[in-house]
Image (cartoon, one colour):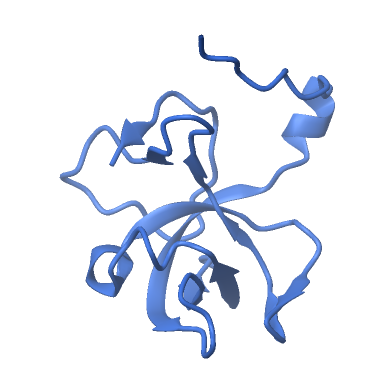
Length: 128
């Protein structure tokens, strides 16, 4: 029998609307020293560049995410990770039981989404 974790507490729609989710271009990616799972990335938000630290190094080779346009939450409080100030959060998720990694991706791949483009709504995810 599979037992899933209980749902987290509900948030208001107004709380969800506070998230500033934008498509950002990943400009550089490097492994964080003394960590086998952390990347330090520089991203173009469309109005500035930021440093993001994320624990995705075991799941994505550098060449798979470098120069990609992916969604990031820009208005989280900064957080120091391995002494590096992370200034945003990439939107990726791993399922609890099956350990599948999900990445939000555009449904149309012909056009490049400009850095800084905001989200109107979330409509789907792709298993990678």
